[in-house]
Image 1 (tube, rainbow, N blue to C red):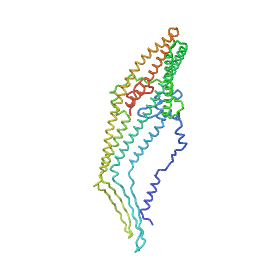
Image 2 (cartoon, rainbow, N blue to C red):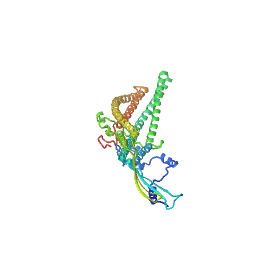
Image 3 (tube, rainbow, N blue to C red):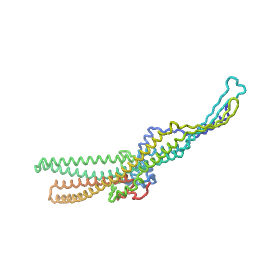
Image 4 (cartoon, helix red, strand yellow):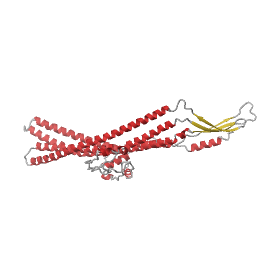
Length: 468
């Protein structure tokens, strides 16, 4: 025989079981590995790029057949980079915590029976007892737990967006590196060929006794150096293409969809340091994320302080004894905060908040210093580049003059080739400085937390555009 309180409890158990989640396997098998290593579906990527939603990145329309600009590759990297998949999973974890924070603790129900099994049991009945209890203390911090989880989820969203932008900027920088290398490799190849011709001419002249063995050795050394430069740049180009493919989620040997001839940004008139530093904390997504994390920690401190309130639990009870006497009552349990008043947790949460406070100030200071250092370096590179381009123009004129004089028989082959070699070497220096200028421009965007105006930037967003 069961008591009258058993059936309601049984129904509650059935309803709870019906609402439970079910298990679905997610095996790490060969099919999963094949999907992970498969190149991205560019048709799907094209659709997603046209409707991407990000605080800093704007939607773009891709035409893979014509090749992609560095700015377009930046968006593609955000959509296809394998590492970002795991980063985005943090959002699911954070939002799961929001769900958990919005749940109240389960009430505790109990049921028991006592059957007379011996002695003078005449006229007795089976006794039973039922109770339903709930912890009231959880209501004191319920809203604060939800607030802390919500701030933490916002911090994670901003941190993910920051990491996505880091990947996008890294892809742009890698694309600029590859474009610069593809400009330098032909120059290095031509320089190697000129050095070979000069060496061949010097070797022939040495055999005829027209020049010394030292002159031949010098020409040989110049050729070996030019060949080494060409090989190093060729290797760097291959490595740069593979690095960019890795960022895009492409196999190492696949052709990179980079549009040939895409210009590098010149950054002729970047904003001033004061303009970039102003409002830095409201633009950089990592600083915004840290502020949300700080707000979450501040709420946790408030939870710890409020948790000093004594734990209170209530319970409703109903039962019948063996004498068939039915009773209904209630109970209240209160913890007495004599020894443990939550001092340890309050001290820990307060110290953590202070640590985050000081760390935020340090990050803001470092961000300001980064802006200043990059602007200073960018100004220096721009001056070096102006001087190098002026020298390049002079060397081009000299090389052309030597080439005409050689055709007229006024100068020898070696002198003309040396002039051409000097011009090619300077051209590679100019290309290298342009690549460094592009790198510094992207680094300045990362440090300042926004796209900056620059010519030849393709889809760059003007300063003062949308912000998070």
